[in-house]
Length: 177
Image 1 (tube, rainbow, N blue to C red):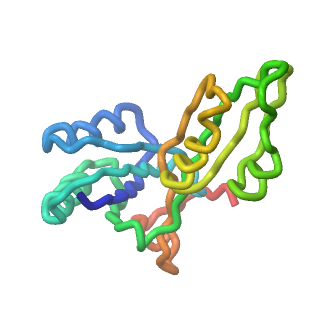
Image 2: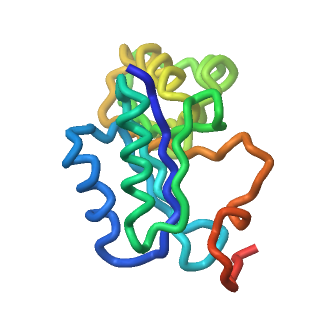
């Protein structure tokens, strides 16, 4: 199975998430992760969708079908080597009195993770990186009693030198920049 990241630029409208995800459901393609946020252009949202599939042709057909959705401005399918990407994870770790203390130096220097909240009974640690890096840290921290674990979907940008504006239809887009 090959991992594909599909980036969809859309108008920011109600119900669009359903229109897009139903295209995956119809083709029986599972979405591994989904992240949606507004872009640097006001009113333009970016969907970053990660799927694993064994047929490039099927993924290309899916991308062409997504392009047909009226509110979709642009769609791109990428392989991992064509993008820069990361995820974020939060770990809530128990720190009971008398337990083996966390080696914060290893957490920071080796795993590049950071304590973002400290409580008497637990700490919250943030780790950014690839899925593999996050699960490497998960395995390291697992013996310390993980109370909660949450991981975001992938965020990604193309390694291409072009900017988003070059792909959008001709229009006056208000910028946040």
